[in-house]
Each structure stands twice: as structure tokens, then as C-alpha cells.
Image (cartoon, rainbow, N blue to C red; front, side):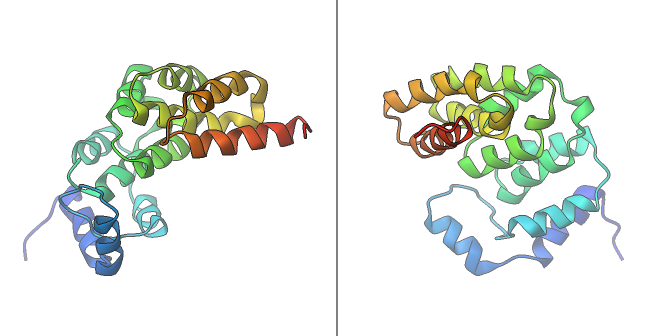
Length: 182
């Protein structure tokens, strides 16, 4: 019987849990991954729960931009205390889909002491995807800093960017609710 390293074992779990219907739906939606196993988020979270956080392993999975599930798993297993501000900024710039941005921001970046600084830098980027990531990160910080976040949201809404419009509209509605504004 062949021995497998940790990366191979994890990929074997992806394969064992694959869902062709979900994978086909994701492909038809236009995502350009070479490999899509079709795992849902609870399945990826289950796999992550069995992995001891490791920067090296997380970086290895993050670098596997060809595989959807690898990109989603990486932020779940990245030790927060080992993520530098510079690397966190790079990761936000490297995001290629809204799904990856959502998981990166929710599972990893929002927990960092410099999360608001990361978000502020990202929302001023020329890259629409990076701005989306910045707003997704701000959404995670919204309840503690609505007044700080509102000007960024309003400016982005005025830009009319289709990618960021839905998240910014939701954020503005939430801000208005939080400050009891009609």
C-alpha cells in the first residue's frame, strides 16, 4: 500500500467527497478552475477541522489556484498569528473569485488586528476584485465601525461598479439599520 503525504491525503478526501452535479453547476457559472470537486462549504470546513493549522500547508493549498477547494481550504488552516500584514495584502490581491474572497475574509482576515487597515487599502485599489475583497472584509467589521465604513461604501456605490454594488448596497442598508436611519 502506498504512503501518502498530508497534501495527498487531503486531496484524496476532496476526491472521496466530490459531487459532480455541484461541480458541473460551478463550471457552468463560468468559474475557470482546472479542477472542481464540487464540495460544499460544510464539507471543506469538516476537512479543515481535522488539520492542524500550518502556514506551510496553507500556502501550498493557496498556491494551487487550479483547484477550487484548495483555495477555499487554505484560509481555514492558515494560523492567524503567522500571517503578516504584507502577506495578507498579497492574498487579497491574489483572489480571483468572490467565493474565495468571502472565505478568506470571513475565516481568516477579519480576525487580524490590522483587518480594517487591510480593508481600507483594498477598497482604494484599481482592481474590482480586490475592492470586492476589501468590502467583504469591511462587512465583517461593520458592526464595530459603521461610521468609519460608510464613506467608503457610499463612494463605491457612486462608482456604479457591478461587482461591488450588491455588497455595498447590503452594507449601506445595514449601516442605516444600525444607526436607526430611515
